[in-house]
Image (cartoon, rainbow, N blue to C red):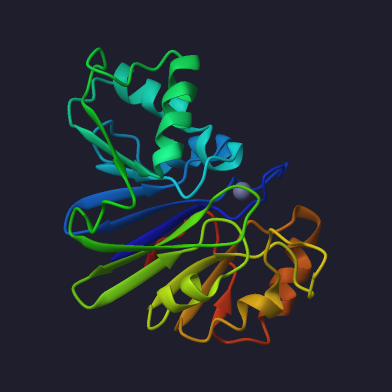
Length: 241
Ligand SMILES: [Zn+2]
């Protein structure tokens, strides 16, 4: 399993791309989240229109979904023919369809390539991956995802603080990418995670941090050096799971 984080930036980051990640196994590619500033790194990493098989969206915030309009637009422009699965919550599908309509993206039978919407609730597999899900605590509903393939496992939190269910979801994973806004405990942040809270997730063998507050990125890189399990991935680095 190969995992490529396209960025580790926060929602309003002036330099680092938004959180978004490509996960590949057995010739299948899943894009998880697609924020507005993840578009250019996605195009650099994965320029061909048929490369991505499916998209999973953890929640509907702008820094996780707005990039989908230019991405789908380019795939249509470049002659994509392959069907695309888009997986998110039931309510998220309705919001997303309204967003695509506003962006002049045809998502029904007028679409230049088939788009199949599917809820996470009804999803047990995505391509070669067994998929499982758990909610986190965020200011809009956010659902973390775990993917298992050939004895290897990867999980991605989306945004928010962990719940008992999401902490259990991460148990035994080889790599977890988790939102982490600041390096110090921040009980005043009800909907974002901090490093001490991430460190309570003892079930994950390795944890990469993203959605790091721009002003805190140097401090975060410094803070993780004390924890061998935890790191800050470079944008567009290719991680082997
Ligand atoms: Zn969010």
